[in-house]
Length: 98
Image (cartoon, rainbow, N blue to C red):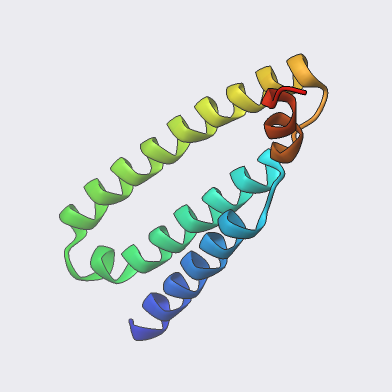
C-alpha cells in the first residue's frame, strides 16, 4: 500500500515539474495527465480498503480527467488554428505591442 502511494506522489511530482518547466501546450496537457495518473495511483489503496468510497472517487476523478482533456484539447486546437503554434511564448510575444 505504501508503494502505491509513493509511486503516485512521484508521478504527481513529475507532472508538476512538467507543468512548471514546459512552454508547449501539448506537453502541458501530458503533464496534467501524469498528475491525474498519479492521483489515481495514490487512490488505489483506498479502493482496496473501502471499495464503495474508492469506486465513487475513481468515477469522479476519471470523469473530471475526461472533461479536462476535452476542454484543454479544444483550446489547443483553437489556438493552433489561429496562430499555427502551440508554444506559449509565441502567444505572449504576439500580445505585446511594438
